[in-house]
Length: 90
Length: 260
Image: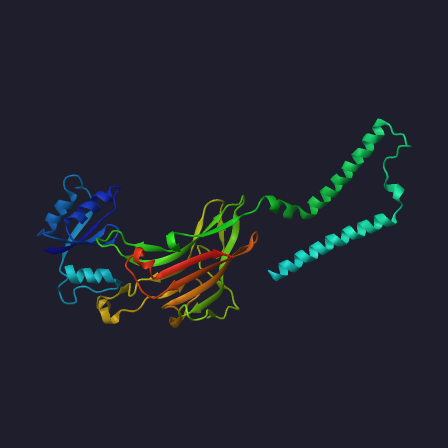
């Protein structure tokens, strides 16, 4: 299981993309069109292919694998739920 | 309010004085001069029309003078805003939930007042002020003023003075309670660092010992040029606990709203 940061450019059909990201696995919504996702996909490209499928190939989107287990791997000021999520799913 | 009441009494006394003076002058005058018709007198049809028209003309002249003098006030009788206040949401408070999350929970509870204008002209330059805040630690204790309220405590709104169009309600935040330790660094997520939540009132900052739990009775007034003042009172009874959802929070946070 790996954790990914998924961010894409808002689109008229964002709800479809959101649904696909949520179906991947455990997720945390950072902001509109920004998610942290825990997935069984081994690479960012596999996750990307799952999200865009055939119909959203032109969507502007990035998928970055992150490792929150790295000591001091994340820091900032945000909602407590985010830190809890990272602690449990990072 | 007291000054307004004195003005009304003065007006009534003025009208009574004019009526008494009129009656007294009539009583002193020659009674025959007020008799427009006598069976012994002969009038032609045009003369009767002339005299009757004179009466209407006199009324018309008096009416025109009255309208010229009190035009604004008369217009205001027919065209004026009518402010209707009501608290948004069931139980008078709402929750801010991030429904995007898998386990949605409230990050804030807030009391919003809806200011609606049911009149026929816009209510311009509306402002809301806190008049008085009373506090008691619990139901056994007596409510007492906790602030020096000599200065006006104006609530933050969309603008310093807000116009309320006809039938387009405007909302204003009266109070909010943020989730304890809602924001922080990763290390702040530890239980030891958790800080209790506070009641936050729009318009004034409550000291810590008056904001953690208790009973608050806040008297507000909304004012503008046309409506004068309209008072309302909010009573908040909160035991200081935070609950994840409104369905649970209503057991520990009771809000009462009334217009005065």
